[in-house]
Amino acid sequence: MCAVFGYLDYKGKISNAVLKKLIRNLSIAAEVRGTDATGISYENQGNIVTFKNAKPAHKMKLYFPRNTKAVIGHTRMTTQGSEKYNYNNHPFKGNCEMETFALAHNGVLYNDTKLKKKYNLPKTTIETDSYVAVQLLEHEKQLNVESIKKMAELVEGSFVFTILRNDNTLFLVKGSNPLTIYHFPTLGLYVYASTKSILDTALQKLALPYKFCEIAVSEGDILQISPDGTLFRSSFAFMDDHCSFSPFYNWDAVDWYHDDAEELLLEMCSCYGINQEDIKLLLEFGYHYDEIEQMLMDTAQLTEALLEIKAVLSIE
Image 1: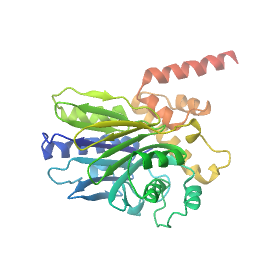
Image 2: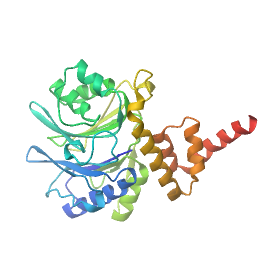
Image 3: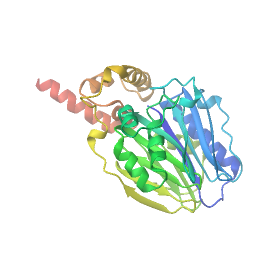
Image 4: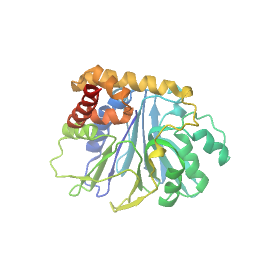
């Protein structure tokens, strides 16, 4: 479990100080999904600038200059590739000949090794599974909806990708992992985060006195938000088996993911007034870590799931 967050400011009405406070609030709220590393990327004079470090968000000073139109961010819970080597942390920079970009990923990809071999992707010191998404986009030599669609249909696992191109175009790509997006039309501002809870916590502290609407986003959606605020919606062929465990994949090699995710859920649940035994019961009945985490934000859904399980147990 990691988190993505960020904004796109298309009217330029908001001060740099407010935008910095927004990113700080988002990053700290996103610590609930990871504290091993924190990073942001933004465009400056046509170049992608990335700042990241193996520190929790509250210990970072996330700087970006005035008139920064868009920022993408990430807080990390380490799965593959030690956070002590900063090149393993998000966001990652990529280059598609005339275009450069930054990419941040929330989720786990399990066919990265297979894709590297199939497409003869360059060897790199970066150890994370996420980086194969960058390499696949670079392989296409262009960054647009079509190349992103192709990448999203090739990778297998759980994911949300956020991609910032060096012309300040923002792409949000939703697989099975959570993503919430708000739009403030009066301000000319899009803000997003992995979960509604993260977004609401950050915005409550900012107290913007303006109305917003939630942008609907579903599995298989690609949202392209242009620097002028125009939103274009496309899609990719999302299949359930993109996020299921492959019978041909050696999951024993990634037991650390299961152990860490379960441990984090058991630590988190008490903050939401949920018993650890209930979390263990959900896991026993086949609920995925990401599903359970989302349920923690929606107690009605969690209660319904537990009642169904307990009804089955009572019959047995």
